[in-house]
Structures are given as structure tokens and as C-alpha cells.
Length: 120
Image (cartoon, rainbow, N blue to C red; front, side, top):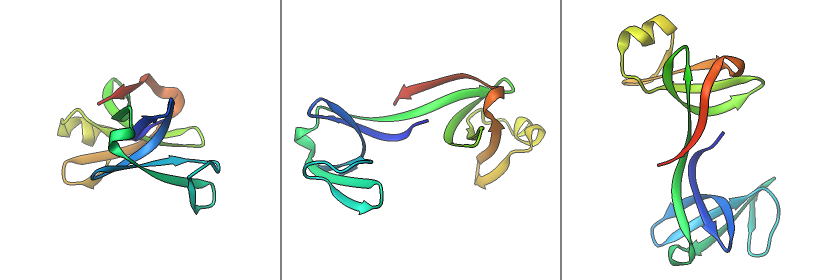
């Protein structure tokens, strides 16, 4: 499940973070020019002009017929954020208030439908 920036650089796609005129590229294994920032996480900063594509990717789904963004996954459950904007639905589903107007919950992965990745 992806929710964040991705960049294509030298024919490969990486998790990414734009930073002004640069882009931070991340990978889970050592590589030429990549520095370890924590165990299993390596970063390389490249000029944005060298990046072939930069996009925001998010995973969406429906749960109980309602629209959600998938934020994460853990042991057969998906952390989801409601995007339908209807308070009665929030209340009926028992979603947690994460921030003002932002409601999240845990959905059993086997109850989620229409799981797809979108480039925003």
C-alpha cells in the first residue's frame, strides 16, 4: 500500500521526498551514492532536474460501500481514512476523529473492495 511521493530516476522508481531543487530518493538496500539513515533505510539526494517523473501516489478503496484512502497495513487490517465527508456515515461506522474533519479506522483487509493505486 503506497501513500506518498514516488520518483523515477535512472529507469527505477523510488519512494521520494521533494526538497526544493532536490529530491530525496529512498530504498531499503545499500546502493551506490545512498547513505544509511537508519537500519534498512537508505537515502540519496539528487537534483530535481535529473528526476524523470515525480508524482504523489495513494491507494484508495471502498469499505462498507464508502470511499477511503488506505494509509497502512498491519496483520490483515488496513488503516483507512474516510473521504466521503458525511457525518452520519462517520458516526454509524464508529470511525475515530484523527483531526478536525478527518476520520480514520481499521478495516479488515478481506472486507475492503476496489483497492487501487492512483497517481495524484
